[in-house]
Image (cartoon, rainbow, N blue to C red; front, side, top):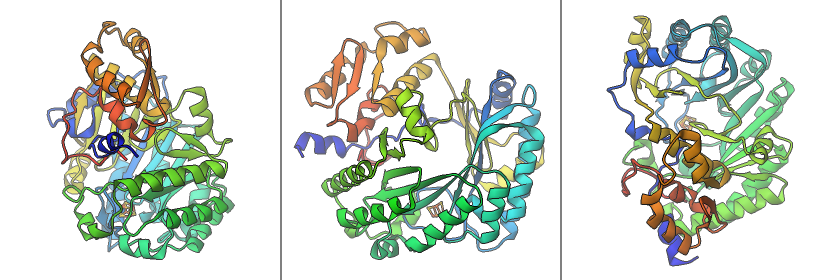
Amino acid sequence: MTDTLKSYMRRNVPRYTSYPTAPHFSKDVGAKDYAAWLRALPPKDPVSLYLHVPFCRELCWYCGCNMKLAKKDAPVAQYAQTLNREIAVLAAHLPEPMEISHLHWGGGTPTALVPDDLERAMDAVRANFYVTPDAELAIESDPRTLTDEMIARIGQLGFTRASFGVQEFNPKVQKAINRIQPPEMVRWAVDGLRGAGVAGINFDLIYGLPHQTVDTLLETIRLCVEMLPDRIALFGYAHVPWMAKKQRLIDEAALPGVEARLAQSQAAAAALVAAGYVAIGLDHFALPSDAMAKAAQAGTLRRNFQGYTTDRAETMLGVGSTSIGRTPSGYIQNLSETGAWARAVEAGELPVGKGVPFTKDDTLRGHVIERIMCAGEVDLDEAALRTGAARDWYRAHEGALAILQADGLITRRGARITVTQKGAPVVRVVAAVFDAYFVATTARHAVAV
Ligand code: SF4
């Protein structure tokens, strides 16, 4: 690896699951703004729904999520009740009952709810929205705490996809991150869900964990491939203990360095491709028959807060504390403190914590960044035409682009920029060129690989 590439890899850049990115959301945006954005939604366009459960039954030390450890059932049950109320409050602000094409339960651990509470929430969704017969209904789960009863209920409720954080199967690594789940446990969950009728299975893997090596990761992939998940996301562990306090429990001395991380990510990607998976974007892999592989090939892949997605709806409505939504007018995030969120909902208010309205410039740059992250290329003139921007809008970035080109990270053909194979691992650095808010810093984001 060249020193130049190494220096790009050390750069701290956002993951670009949104643009503007979450640190630029402002408390100046409130419930009144969101209500106006909701009223302005085109009523016939389908929307997506994201439901957030911030509770987990176990604590993983690598976790960067805003979650709460649920030792008792009562707060989780209370949360579920408020969630149902919020679904009704939200729906009351829409121009008319709207169609849902994608629904995603994330967290935390959504299966920390008891099965009856999950069912009541899905009933509330169906009472307030029209869920299309072919909608994708996805739920994140934790094999360590999943039960036979919950598996059966997920099947009965018509879920089409379930995802698991597998991360790494090596026992020493699992101990170092406090996530003990042997392969048999994951296999039990996968077989159970498939048996209950859930056709789509996603796995998340992580490289760059303490004590992890290329060999442990390749063995993990071998075991995963035997279970044949449709999609696998391969993330680099983002060690940001200044933001995620749980990560202070991780032994920093056991973390692999930049070169070892790159070797792990490249070996894992090659093994997944050799096993028949199609590489998608920065960090996803899918079986060729899967909708995500088809969307990538058709150029319709999108990026949202869950990462890469086949969801093409322009609006995602978020429900639950901390959840983030997107409308054509801007991003919105619910209050993250569960008590404050619940009080707002119980008062019949939209529980908005912060947000950011889109300027024309945000829409242009958001499109450019999304195309770079999803397709590895973008036509800057076409982007200008699409958003009504001046044709020379990117003139100020010519210097930065010339450096990336000279370093072999991109090629240029007129206004078309293509990320090269060398640049692919640091595609976020290329995207960051077009981020008008980005200030290079070592303290706010994870390293680029
Ligand atoms: S990694 Fe997932 S299960 Fe573990 S603490 Fe974080 S949100 Fe909960």
